[in-house]
Amino acid sequence: MNKEKVLVTGGAGFIGGNFVQHMVSKYPEYQIFNLDLLTYAGDLVKHKEIENADNYTFVKIDIADREAVMSLFKAEKFDYVVHFAAESHVDRSITHPEIFVKTNVMGTQVLLDAAKANGIKKFVHVSTDEVYGELDFDPTTFFTEETPLQPNSPYSASKASSDFLVRAYHETFGLPVNITRCSNNYGPYHFPEKLIPLTISRVLNEQKVPVYGDGKNIRDWLHVKDHCLAIDLVMHEGINGEVYNVGGHNEKTNLEVVQTIIKELGKSEELIEFVTDRLGHDKRYAIDPTKLQALGWKPTYNFDTGIAQTIQWYLDNKEWWEQILNGEYRNYFSDQYSIK
Ligand code: NAD
Ligand code: TYD
Image (cartoon, rainbow, N blue to C red; front, side, top):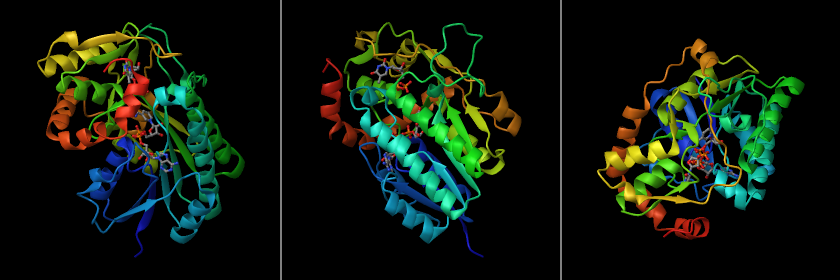
């Protein structure tokens, strides 16, 4: 019997990479295709253990390259598409918004056209809670699937645009889709431009940690492995056309996150440096996951266990993040921050 084919876009990045590893080991009956352009955020080093697996195939393609995407879909006739590929960093979207429109909006539209032309069982679009905009500091308010979209950054605006296209392909053409909107992820293979891996790597190197503004902005942290379980569930059980929010009620201020990491590593809070705030910095994100829980999802990590394991992972995998810090990342860091 032919294996069912699952196309994962962005499977060389942080969340897509964890999802590819989850799928390859859990489902030998599926052929998992990882489509990735290998931008600065993607690498295949993380897939050393699965690269020779029978049910794993890598293809290097730009999702915005219509011809290449169309011919891949025509040749492979995928059953499922799980779409992670994106430009994902808010700070980069403030300095260079164009690529966010090309990849996140136009790239998604190319994939939707390819899925529509070739008939698929499900297109899961991995989006973000940032499309809802920001919440104030009232701890009883949460983003639900009904919260209106009010994106504030070029990144979240590009993701919201892609969400609308996915919705439109369902409403207009009947494409079987789901949209997931997740809170901030953390865990293995998180690229060190984002707050948690940036803090761990800099604290380990005894370097200053830049905290934007007063450090009181709140994010709702979810372990990447719990996110992967959620997407697996939505891919198989999600009701066509529905949106599912993913989050585990782990709200922390940025300062609390940085202080926790410094404490776990036994270093001094003198490493904290408050720097100029991010433009348009969203105050607070917090997810109401009731709808996904009703489908059967339950997070397996809380922040305390998850952050301790993540710090240990970064200690055990220095080689992976050090080769990133020693490359092009250096120029990024000195352009982005006034500290050394
Ligand atoms: P990431 O930046 O770590 O990885 C993105 C991957 O996409 C990389 O492997 C990159 O090479 C690839 N890519 C970029 N442009 C491409 C293109 N044009 N064609 C093909 N591949 C391309 O991102 P991530 O943090 O893993 O996020 C994955 C998805 O999850 C994104 O859609 C993001 O919006 C969403 N999301 C992320 C978070 C988070 O906390 N990181 C939270 C919610 C949602
Ligand atoms: P980030 O990891 O970039 O994720 P997002 O912007 O998608 O939430 O940032 C998480 C929070 O940490 C956000 O409120 C901005 C803040 N932050 C800092 O204070 N300093 C930094 O150097 C970075 C990268 C982020």
